[in-house]
Image (cartoon, rainbow, N blue to C red):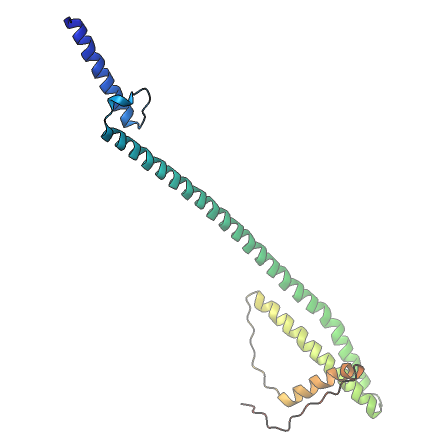
Length: 198
């Protein structure tokens, strides 16, 4: 064998070694005959490929989870804004309706007070008192709704009211007696036991 041929074979072996090193550094086995790689090189190449695939797969999962979380957060923010808008609308509606009910209710109570100045039978006075009590109860409810709508706006209005529990119970009974009579129900309030007031 002449020197040129030896030099050519040596050069080809160097090129093949460089090709193997290059392909191993990129985790590729393209055009590398498996016979020229030893078992350790194959195991290292396979292990690195598996690790890279596992990392890429886990990274893809993390991106998917992140996208889902961001979507859920956006949906939660939208739902929160919708709930705030609905609460604001409800508060405005309650406030507006309360004011709308207040004027006619004041008129009803005013007329009931005018009627009470007329000469009435005992039964008419009893009915009139029930109507006045019901009207006053309705006025109190309207007032509470107005206070509630103020609380919704952040204006907390608290008040301490002293009241007679027995008298309040009697007023409630008086309001529901007509309904109980229509349904043939006996309605009684027994307060023979003392009621603690403090």
